[in-house]
Length: 345
Image (cartoon, rainbow, N blue to C red; front, side, top):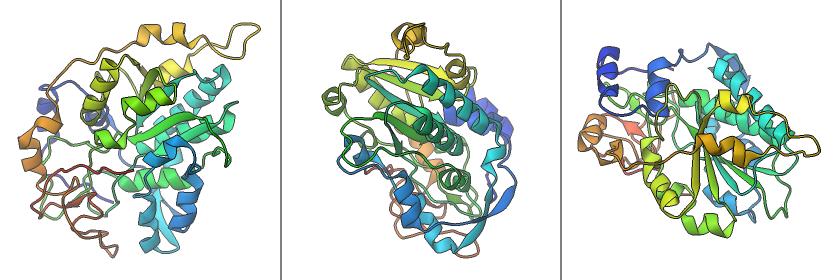
């Protein structure tokens, strides 16, 4: 897969100075190239979806998305996908999740893990296998891979195939919700894709995340937002801003942490199996200030021209994995639609 863009890194750097850095800005600016590919046997889309699909009677299941997982069906029995285990951030995510599991998950908490998609998968898989209590991983990946595309959805797809979570058994009524986000989704935001490039960036809408009423009904009082490195991500991603503001206004505590912070969480105090998360997270309290985001920026939509929810048709999986949209998630830059958002659940 190649990413073909119509703008220089210098302009990206200049654009970053205009707005606070979010996870997608930093992943585009600092991230290493997508790893070398390796040949993998592909599962059927239904089998891959089943490995990540929560029990239907669990509240969090309504937000899970199978969009990216459905992309494997047209690809045949095998494909060359990035070797995501070689990514440093994947190892860091695995280590952070293992340490969180040792410390006992905080109660009444919604987790949003906004890393490169493969790292989010690794985090959820490790946490679900090591935690003492059920974990509910919620996949929000809402785009398709392409040979010539803006962001490497095939890297995230490889993460879904490589890492498998331990799902709560049927009949489970409560589980710790871990929403998996892909920080690639709005990367290269200052770029105008070339004419023959598949624009597979996407936004998450407010409907793609639980509302205040649902969180209250589930006893959620706190949101932990996980990024790769707080040195490279100052604020939440732009498409999360409205939800964060609504949660904050309703009195939910929001905490922004990175993988290094979670890796350094100390062992529980003697006689307890759970870390004092209230004390540990207190210094990471995050106040969401109203700001202008890409969601509000008509120039951003003009640069993209297509994709983001309003292009019609289905991706063509042939020699170039390219198409004019698909279920509302991405499209060729020759289109005329723009950024309606990949909503649904």
